[in-house]
Image (cartoon, rainbow, N blue to C red; front, side, top):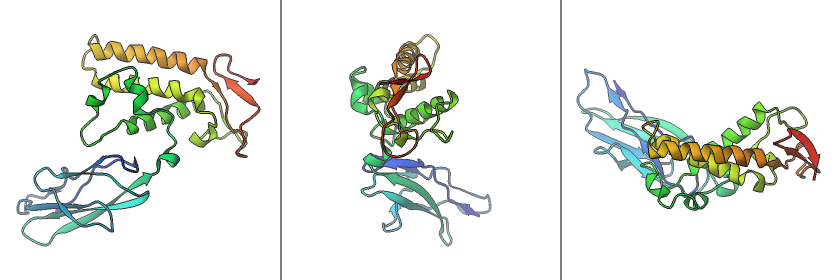
Length: 228
């Protein structure tokens, strides 16, 4: 039996580099060795041979749901399997921080971007998810009692610093390999700056989903609604 496999990101922004990794494809012991691995990055594309490194780095020019096909061949008929990932525009991604703001604090931070990517957009997206999760934990919900979404935050100036330091904290934590190494110290610094930015925030959002910013804001220090 032949089992094509693919590791890929769930969401990727248009023109952002992403890695389509088929290295975990495998066969049962009764099969001949794998002689060919090919990846087709989208349904309208063509297969590209990746037998040697088993992955394909790619970027998409259009948004939408992309069907990625992995083809694995031994000495018989090739076996294929489809996988999907979502490509979104910068506008729909609507992230609250960007790589340029990170460089203001760490000149060489882009050299630590992981293989298969050319940006930290995945980290900015994760920071946004963490912020929304934090607001949910604080019971800061919309007028229906539902969790806020990224589109609910109508004034992103209030969350830009929070998001930026969240990303820096995550990056430094991932680089740290000892409690007292330099990256651990930087992670602590940026976590503290994240906390300060979070506590300073006065969130303005659309609580009733009518497309208009509310006349009041939520003060993260007093944990109350205040008129601005």
